[in-house]
Amino acid sequence: MKKPTFPFVALLFCMAHLAFAQTPKQPNVIIIITDDQGYGDLGSTGNPHVQTPVLDKFAQESVRFNNFYVSPVCAPTRSSVMTGRYSLRTGIRDTYNGGATMAQNEVTIAEMLKQANYRTGIFGKWHLGDNYPFRPNDQGFDESVIHLAGGMGQVGDVTNYFKGDRSYFDPVLWHNGVQEAYTGYCSDIFAEQAMDFIQENRERPFFCYLSFNAPHTPLQVPDKYYEMYKDIDPASGFDHDGRPFPHMSEKDKEDARKVYGMVTNIDENVGKLLDTLDKLNIADNTIIIFMTDNGPQQSRYIAGMRGKKGSVYRGGVRVPFFIKNPAFKADKEVEIPAAHIDLLPTIAELCHVDLPKSKTVDGRSLVPLINSSNPTWPERYLFFYWTRRYPELYNNIALQKGDYKLVGHTSYDSPITEFELFDIKEDPYEQSNIIATNTELAETFKKDLDALYYELISSENLMHPPRIEIGNANENPTILNRNDADGERGIWNQEEIYGKWNVKVNAGVYHIKLKFIKPVATGGNLLFEAGSVVTRKKVQSPITDSIEMNNVYLPDMECEILPYYLVDKKKIFPFWVQMEKIN
Image (cartoon, rainbow, N blue to C red):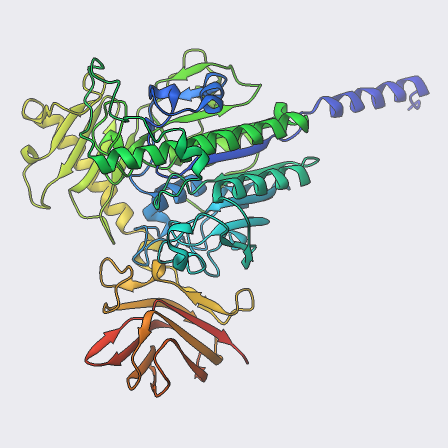
């Protein structure tokens, strides 16, 4: 066969080079999520008081999903965002009480994108596990700057709890698993860290998860932003609105002023981030998502919807969701219901990476809805629940499909007539229960609700809860905090309460330090139970808020750790326990 001439070879080379040059770069991905910012806390959703010019403009330049749903509370939403799965499948069943730890075997967006050589970073709130092997740096994130627990200054946030009403300022955060002091206001810090990460990784694809903890309680806001709202009446301006409006107490109004200040601060930080993308000339190749994690915690404007955070009514689970990229049609609205479980499959398709093969992904890619001028989608059920510890059958639980939604606030053995059925299209504010005239439809919904409920509560990661690993080189020492303490319901900052931690211990000799909320009296006995190993220490030292037990040998085991101090007929549970393996 005659060899090709040089011009032909050159032509082939040029064609190949041209094809390579025209291959689109993998898009960067930024998810911005805020904490307890309800649907109504934006100017673009009809709030006349809050000032959010950046996010309002961003919404107009985005594809807006007008019926986007999440879970009623923080950790369940965040686990679904990260995995594309209902939270109960991931082991997440609560926001504390030892139920906010996502199983290590879950595949996060960060882990999925690392298949395609993405750099990954999280800045802000994680709330899916504070210890190895559940931290973000154990779950696919190359760079992480986070606070612990569900909120800064809450009981699980051991580095900021004792700062009280200044916990949002100059916090001690966890940088790649190591404590580090920062200066400034928390939202500013998280945004700055995200922008530094973007700057450092501008030449390669990256995933940035900017997870603001604001406007979650405690409602701490810089004076500059509070001053903007201190004189407003957040309940005013709705006299002729025609939609339901919640009663606002004076405390609710004051809380709203602080929330609006915190949201305006977020708005300004989002503006700085968008400016950074423009200056780096990477905005055209960046997918940006803005959303919130659930409804508002306090009563205020929420576009007429019923319920707030913790509720399965729309006020608790419907949130703003905007997705922007120059490749998408700007200023587009999608009315078809979508949900938090759809983020992972959407990002997988947009970034051309494979979905996790070992997991049931409950969500669907939103790409067909984003790209289509007349989108259609097969109807599906969306499941909502919220009760402490584990889901309670028919208590604050709902199933939605198409225009209809079945809601249960009743007993496990109640007849169908004690449920609520709403036609969301005709009654978006869930004011008219139509179950009396639609019992056959309601029975169908209830049958499907039962099937999904029993499937989810039988999930492997729920039946066999994740265990914190003690004595692993990836985290030593380990601090067991109250957010992750199981036992009695509602463990918070009480002194006398039954609590425990579910752990896996690596054999070795440990130094153990127990910190108490208040100083404890001398003369008592400290008992430290770890499975079959029980260690007792008589405390003769002066009154103190911390006690140490050194050189305690523990074998390999999966067990419960139950520490408590017995004194003056009291059984005092420690605030946190630090365990350090020394050999």
